[in-house]
Length: 121
Image 1 (cartoon, rainbow, N blue to C red):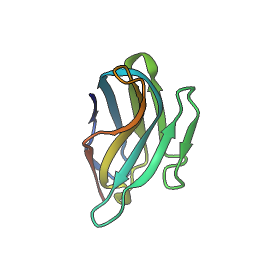
Image 2 (image 1 turned 135 degrees about the vertical axis):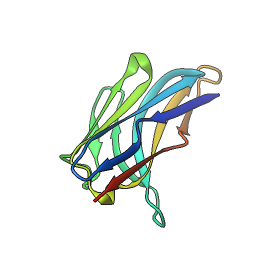
Image 3 (image 1 turned 135 degrees about the horizontal axis):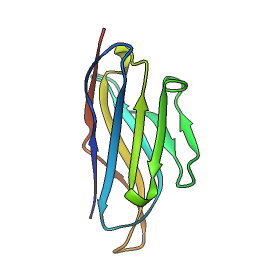
């Protein structure tokens, strides 16, 4: 079993910043790509940013220049620094990790339960 737990969400005014964290625990042997996704009410879940184990990051157009994804492989943790937040960034933010489990030595995608980010205008 692998668990992903997000934290750091909350209510912030437009133009403000938040830093999200996601920790993977349980039967983790290693983690390949990690990423952040978000889902606003009435909309589909969308990609925000991803980062490979080597630290190569990719961003959705909406996040480019405002958000920064990073990770600490020793802590099995991925971060999302969000600056210049806008009301349209309001969503539940989910962490996803491609995990090589120590029990089966197979790769699986795992999701966290999400953390709410609300940006007031």
